[in-house]
Amino acid sequence: MKTLIVYYSLEGNTQWAAEQIAERLGADTLRLVPKAAYPDKGFKKFLFGGKSAVMKEVPELEPYEADVTKYERIVLATPVWAGTLAPPLRTFLRREDLSGRRFALVASSMGGSPGKTFAHLKALLGTAEDVPVLSLKDPKSHPSQANEDALAAFCDKLT
Ligand SMILES: Cc1cc2nc3c(=O)[nH]c(=O)nc-3n(C[C@H](O)[C@H](O)[C@H](O)COP(=O)(O)O)c2cc1C
Image (cartoon, rainbow, N blue to C red; front, side, top):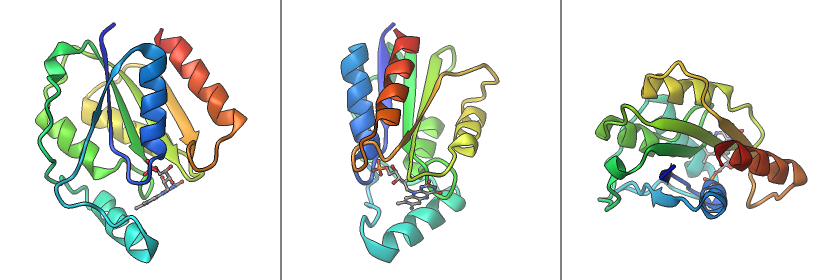
């Protein structure tokens, strides 16, 4: 199934996951880049990103070339921000008509449960279907066997 992995990543963990999945599935990736970058250091990082997530902001994105209509399956990958998705995913979902596609969801967190993040993504996708999900804990900065096992099981499910 032709698959596109759409992701946003501030500090590289979600990007690492997206690239691993792409390699294992032979899928393409689309990195979402907000026009105004979020701060990636210190106190401002949590303040600005957290507020943006809680306020459900829809930040402008840099143009991308991927033709989303070419893909039968879309994997959405996001860091967990204040218990929900990172806002660049919100912009993507508002912009693209994804009706008729298959979906899978990936969330990278520091340790918090991604349950709400997946629920919010499914609500935005308008699907009540059972969607494959993958939850990782900082897989690039804190590699672990648990992350490896979860990643392998997720990719097996999508193969
Ligand atoms: C603005 C902001 C809010 C965050 N909120 C949460 C949270 O609610 N729960 C959690 O477990 N981790 C939270 N984190 C940590 C990230 O979800 C986690 O480190 C993730 O792996 C980062 O992915 P990235 O490297 O792709 O940006 C937050 C990080 C940022 C920058």
